[in-house]
Length: 408
Ligand code: DGY
Image (cartoon, rainbow, N blue to C red; front, side):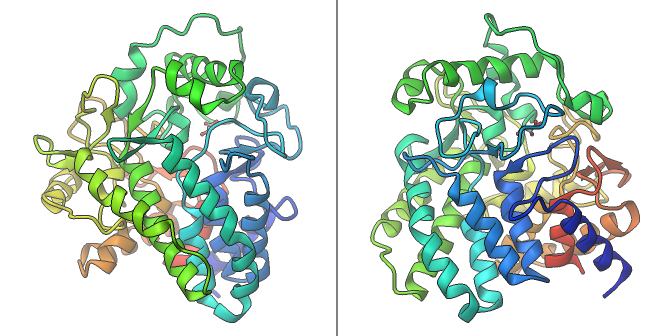
């Protein structure tokens, strides 16, 4: 093993809290949903049983309605805000009230493929909870066949410029005074602005006040964005879950119809004027008019890429490391501010999986540039796509996992 392999494993072990991982100590001291899915793959590279365990703990936090929350607060830690009391999650583990991009079934398939014999028993046990979670998205998150988010944190791309116009229409009245903790861990210039946080908390309050009743939230929540991240990750996850179900002789009856619905719904995310899959505000119908890295998950989801490859070449022209999370030519681009420009190793991996499967050479190139990014700058949360400079949290679980599973 190389020195970087050893370091990646050390980070995964350091961030292990006993059956589940935290993304990084301090900034994110709890179990995050999509972080945990990548972590599972990372652990599986040196300890298969630990990889399955990560997914088992994640899915054990599933709510009665099928939702798997984006944060599970296993042990209260005052270094993070907003904590369990602000969210008021109603599941078996104290949690947030929204979900996150469903990466877990796709990672489960990759772990299963490492050793199908060892994976059969854990995968059989997990399968019904994955189906129930995917059904929850189909029941509560569709608009004209496109998958939506109801809070910027649900897409994981917290402060992407994609939400700016729609968030600006929210007047965040009625939230209690609060003290942020994230800016005590990381330089504020790399984090979302206060105006964003006010709206994040206002949206949490809407959910909290109605006990996370999804039917009620559909009526009152003004923020409902049809989004390529949610859409492409769920479509891919449906395909991988159907594969696993067939492999293990389990009931896959619902999946073909869900896949067909999302294949058709992808059309409603295609912004022809932009030349990319884009975010659509379901209330106004307005496009975000923003090329994000999520747009380039279309190959990963195996949908028609249309003009996406030409757009990729254009947007990526000034980029040296990975895929920029927002078009560098856009006035909203900020190379170090979280989801407004930086390059994210795990997004690069998903995008490259799609390129590879489509037989495009961009996949290998993306892997090389991501590997160089990590080798030269360490296991940061994310990176400046122009200079490679590390940003956000350090000793980061998903960056270490991506290194072991894909780069090393
Ligand atoms: C945070 O606290 O910044 C997280 O990204 C929310 O999920």
